[in-house]
Image (cartoon, rainbow, N blue to C red; front, side, top):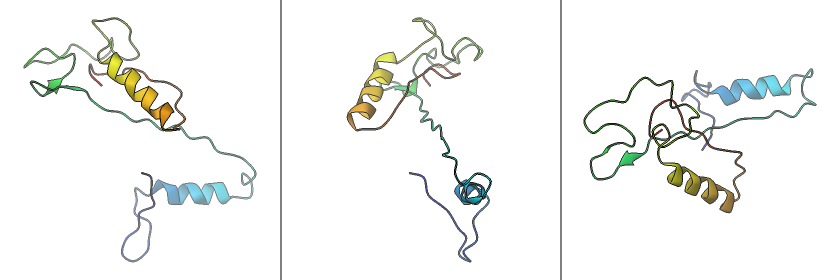
Length: 108
């Protein structure tokens, strides 16, 4: 859910980026343009039996982040079946989605 946020006095709070965006988009120099937005939903998958991130050594931590971002392979990409199911559920719900990718941390 994306919404505007204001103080009780009616002023936009500093994190209300939609307010500033509306000002920019109303500018006569760009008002005839159509903006594009990219929104990401990020999540971390946990092993249900131990409440530890998927792909992490139990009780330990994974190696450096570099090899996992947009990676392929059983030793670098974790939870693909869950990611694919989430992707299909979005499509079924009518949500436009263009792809998925692994993030910098295993299980993310």
